[in-house]
Image (cartoon, rainbow, N blue to C red; front, side, top):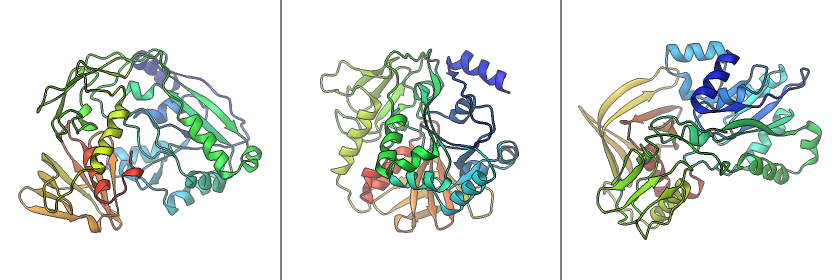
Length: 375
């Protein structure tokens, strides 16, 4: 499959992966920035050996497709947004058997091109495996396939490469804080400013991640069309350029990057007055899917989703309410799905193509005063 993937990556994306020769007698832990949906394939192209990737358990509960995935690449399942004990044990077992492990330590694909700052638990995990550490970087992956986007783009010069290799001796010589700094520095390298990403619909579906208008401060009024994003309530309009920056004729519009707009949204929500029982967010035609422990996914209901200060409510043929006091965590999955966990079971809200799971995720964390830990 290697020649086929090489040709497809170059033809469709303009992407090239630099080959890296590994010691045949040694297995490794490989960590990488999580920039696009094809990251595992883009990374794997650099190494001439099988890699056991850590993957969300949600990907392994999709019937026949998941069975094929388990058989062909044997991913290590992990609960979204956590590093649970069973996943760590699986990784340790595979490492002892001589397997090379690949992990995207952010746990979530980036929405803005910037990585989430990684904590000390990653260092503890690295030390438990006791393997040489490879820090791999994909430059331009976010521009090729933004998480919020409708279609992939072509970006000449996009590439994947080994940024740094740390031997077991080097890892032992570093303090935890020193190692964490090295990891964050190497994974968070900015996209090369010379890269350009071609598309006739560069801004399409930006409302999956942008939902607060910076001019009139209205929520859920932003819509995208081709290369522009506009507000339905005021005159705001911004163009998304090939270099991943914004331009606008609106004097009050100051954002240059998606990340700046996202940071503004967080600050706005911090000061938002959350009134009890008031509908904060809502969407039509949302599907509720349940995934109970030991079972495959099952559609429970299709209806109108609303969020207030205490719960999610979905109304269709019947009404189902999920109180926040019972929910352990809320996570984004893919481009437009929201996952939330209750005990050992989890549920999923899946909306239309322009559905923003991110706004619900951010609002949930605002209500729980945990915005500083969000994407």
